[in-house]
Image (cartoon, rainbow, N blue to C red; front, side, top):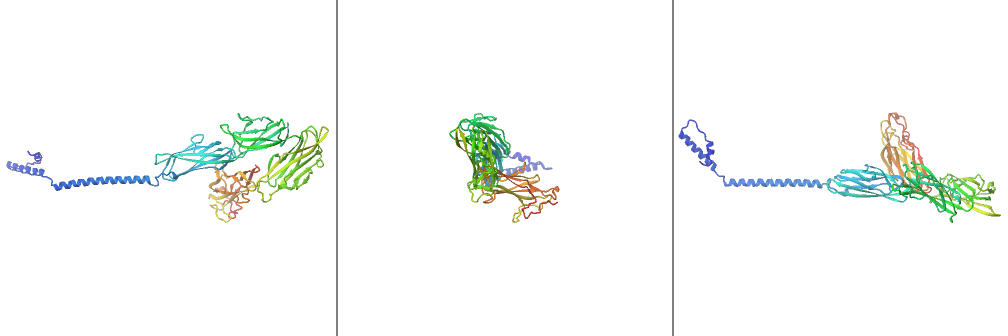
Amino acid sequence: MPKDESKVKDFYIEPENSDDSDKEYMSKEAKKAFTKLYDRKVSDDLSLNLKTARKRHAWLIIISTLGLLFLVALAVLFFFNSDDRKFGEEAISLTLTGPKQAPSGQVAEYIIAYHNDQGVDLNNVEINLRYPAGFTFEGSLPEAENKEGTRLLLNRIHARESGNISVRGLLVGEVGENKQFTAIITYEPGNINAQYARTLNFATEVVASVLNLELVGQAQLPVGEDLALTATYRNSSAQALTGLVIRLTVPGGFELDLPTLTAMPGANNTWFLPDLEPLAEAKVEFKGRFTELSSQETQDIRVAVGIVDDNNEVTIQEEKIHQLNLVKTHLTLNLTANDVSLKSAVDLGQQITYQVTLANESETPFSDITLVAKLDASYLDWATLRDDSGGSVNQGAGTITWTKDSLPFLASLQPGSRTTVRWYISVQPALPTGITAAPSLMAKVEAGASQLVGEKLQAVNSESNEVISKINTRFTMEADGRYYTDDLVKLGSGPLPPQVNQTTTYVIFWRLVNTINEVENVVVTTTLPAEVNFTGQSTVAAGNAITFNPNTREVRWTLNRLPAGAGASFAKPEASFEVAVTPLATDANKILVLTKTSTATARDTSSGADLIATAKFITTEIDNDLGAQGKGIVVP
């Protein structure tokens, strides 16, 4: 059977009603037909065409695949090279700022500002801080990872994100010292497996201290007599001061009665002081005597106050010197001006009370005593002189002289006795033009007397301490509210008069005036009532930016220094801030208070006096605003 005969057999169908010969014939014909069909060959042309088609199809598949891969590569390249996905370190802005100058003992705040000006997130952001000696960490935003406040984490800075990191702490140092702060910031760009680091530095100069000191004691002291020296220390800041110490340095030959304070271990004549609350003061009295007369009649006793850190290192905040005249004669004179025996501070137009105390510390009388007060006539108003003792006045020479003719007790001063002479005179209300140096007044009293030594009458001369009264600058402030400028340009917003349930904004202005001396540590504050809101809008022409404490509702403006002539010889330093008020129904037909009393404090760098100026509270009835006058009562 042929190789395909079985297949032919499968297709064989026996016809009905046919005889055997027909069946055999039909079977043979069918086999021939099917055999011919399966034995037929495909033509060469058709085979070639099929092969060509197959090759074309394969090339199309290859080209299509390569094209698709090319498009994918372009998309990836575009994604990673687009401006939003590029990383450039120059697009990361990081700055460290803080006070350029600050008083020692005051809380200082430092700000790290960041801006990610690109389309890549920054991950694992970490800030490591290095604080200078004398800086005690108090807090930060965000909260630090350790109690020392040296490590802060942000985790991530998103693309196009900006923000601030703040760190605050107590800054303690000596005047003139520069405190260097360092921030090391590390981060990882979201599209690069790498870590970047940036180092920021900022220096703050210590320009003053909030821990101040004043000394009061005798200016004349015979050998063997007791000295009583009172040290008054003050906290001029708004924060409590802790870790305080006081140190006494005395010359040789001085015998000290130890004070009832706890001595600091390992330090000579240094004692711990109690903590000092804000704006408080306390006193320490030192007593002692010179047991032998030094070759130098003038002796310096030094007293210093400072702050001790955790390592028992003392940072001196202020040191004062008390000059003492050791007298050989036993006729002593002690002069005071307004109860101060060394340096005092007075205001223009203020009355000065001078008092000299004359004492006989010897064992024999003094007779025929003459007292001569020598005054600096330059800045005194002689028309205001009041001398109840009837002394002889020489205005040109600036002297007042007393003898036994005007004061009978000057005829004889017995051993162990003492007496006083007192007179009053005022400072001129205004200084002459052209004053450039810080003005001051000098006063001293000289005495001449006779004393019987054995059988011989000897002349005795004595001199009091010199008192210097420095004239304070005239430090004042102004505070007013505005809805319009003087040219009726609108500053505020909302209805005027203010209306119930509607918000009206006003701008509060502060201006300072300082005349003859530079002042430092200027602080201007006020308190907002509960119903008045601080909008956050503020400007300053000098000093630091205005701050608002939402807990105490205190608005504060600080300046490290204010030069002489500010507001007098040149423009007034000014600051302003915006407040908003939304009256309630119960406020209808009322005038609302916008700010309470404003207060400005400062320290005169020449006289050392603590100055204070105030301005009255401000209401919606703004008298000096022509456009707002008569429009302060809330309408329903």
